Image (cartoon, rainbow, N blue to C red; front, top):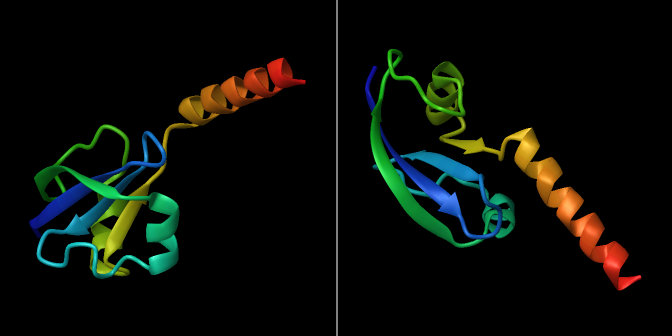
Length: 96
């Protein structure tokens, strides 16, 4: 099964991406998630199938999510989240 997938980058969180079927666009993404995601920026279009390798996502999980519920949310790697949290803690400590 080949799926043409539009990938969107979050303007709010670096490393957060939404994968959607190109024909559906963002229509199946819940409004609450869109609020959290921020303004979506088109990042790339890929033809996905079971042989495709993705850098930060399991292709089987992506294809399953695209089938139902119609989108896949890729969160930033844990190292990125920890680095951002450390930077916030450091910034807050300087303000104290």
